[in-house]
Image (cartoon, rainbow, N blue to C red; front, side, top):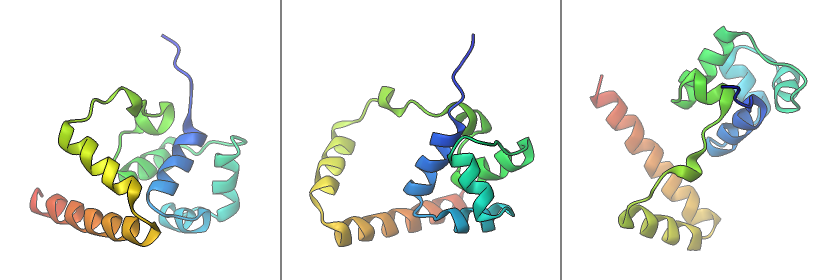
Length: 114
């Protein structure tokens, strides 16, 4: 089975989801902004050690980093759908607040589960 490599778009997606610039992402994985730019432009790919660092940073598998995550196949519960509908109605400030609280809760749960 040949799967399409989607590394560039996956990096860009997770950067956007986490509010990171190319410079910030590069700093987190020990690479320069220009290197991250090359990844996103699909002009180069990092070694597996860096792919693993990116996967750890974003809380996904290396498989997802390389091949992407077709999350359109994920079924939402009624509760999740309602949250999403409300979120989309919020202005930027409201969405930022929800994002911040969600990230804080995620970090708390992650810490509690160690």
